[in-house]
Amino acid sequence: MSLVLVRDEGPVRWLTLNRPEKRNAINGSLVEALKLALEDAKDSSARCVAITGAGTAFSAGADLAALQSMRTASWEENLTDSLALADLFERISNHPLPVIAAVNGHAVAGGAGLAIACDFAVGVDDAKLGFSEVKVGFVPAVVMNFLLRAVGENVARALCITGRLEPMADARRLGLVQMVVARDALETAVQSIGDEIASASPEAIARTKALFLKLRPLPLTEGLRAAAEENAEARGTDECKEGIAAFLEKRKPRWTP
Image 1: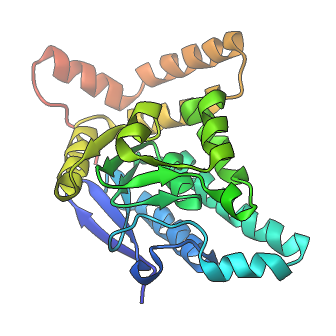
Image 2 (image 1 turned 90 degrees about the horizontal axis):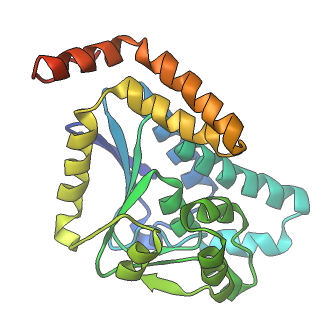
Image 3 (image 1 turned 180 degrees about the vertical axis):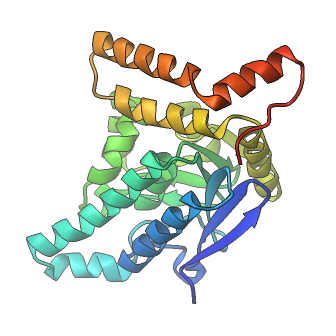
């Protein structure tokens, strides 16, 4: 049985975590399967990627077997496992295609981290999202990197130290997700976002994502210089020239396939 189901719907490449009997809990095999699926998406005709879960949960975080192995694993083994998860989150963040978390149910601990590593998230209104690691004596260390960037330190501290699960409406208010919809409207909402992305320049979107990553560690002056250089380079691309021509001619742009 494939741990990640792959299907294309219009411009959206759907990647479905396929461990419904385990509430799509994360283990090493699922991490590797998702990495491969994300790599394959780069060479597809898709314009964005949507990650969701089979069944009623998005992801319940680490599975029981993984938690049990932590107690007897060596420091080196635990580090290898943690680095694999960190690599997955980084691949999502660095992916040239926009990645949408279609949060179809509860997203807990590493599952919540998976959602916020994406470019943006759409959640169903009866789900909860949170970082419950402290409840089992663990630290939400890997996901903290993305959480700090998503909501700022004060909110991140409150979420991580209490370990509470936020109803989706509150998760949206805090900036953890960007849209909340009824369960039966989730796929339609994501497909609509995919259509919106597909109307824009694929090269410009990839460049925009890359620039976000480049600007993160830079002081303001250096960031503004890097942004100006990227702006100048982007203006010379064929897609930018086509987009301007289409705007002036009042027609839809013809992006490079």
